[in-house]
Image (cartoon, rainbow, N blue to C red; front, side):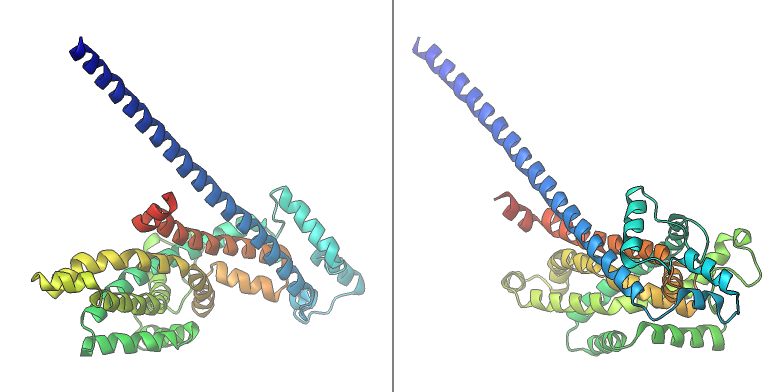
Length: 358
């Protein structure tokens, strides 16, 4: 009887332990889901407030701008007073600031960004076309600058104090202190004017319809703007990676691994890259705002028909609907980059994930 009682006790004790473990796992999943929902809800609330503030600031800047949209549109052409009144109504110059804001918010609630006064097309169609062209340029440049900058930073950090390290640092310092449009002009003069390796710009050849351009011709004209934008983004990631590698070399676990007889190269490749990769990736996500700003200038220099040229045209011509649409899209673009950086630390980094669970 004692043996039977003992076996029953073991069975029920094991069963209770399983129930407790299942209950603990379910509670942990609920906590994780709650934190995830709370994280994204807080981010969406911040994004909404940010969009409202930026839209109001943009309205005020356009309203108090010294540029007259009608005069800028006419470019010195004389028109009759009747036509001038029609143009003022078309551009909304005769409306007050409050009326323009209310009309825009009403249209936005109906998922309508309005009609572009410059292109005479729906704003969403213009942004889709221009932003797609710019997104390809930004994506390729972002990947190239991140990979090349990370590799250069590791090389400079591993060879600290050497000639290679000094050359990489000098290269990065020159890039960080130089305006992006100046670098674009220098590269255009070298590769387009003297060497004649690449065209001056434009997404399509002169006199050719965009639909008739082959993918290879388009990619060929995209090479120089992509290289220019990539070169600009290399400096920050390279210098940051270099400093992180140097800090790792001064850490205790690096000295311990070295004392065990492991080579310096092996330690950097095994421990250094693994510890530097996530912070460098986070910094690369945070560079979305610099990437977008650099794209606007690069597109102006190379006459690339992307979102940068549309932004400048909308600002100079006071195309309110198009400018506000671009402002909203660019804000969301930069916000997504910052959110991805937060996610990489909050849910990818094991140390941060453990702290959140605690």
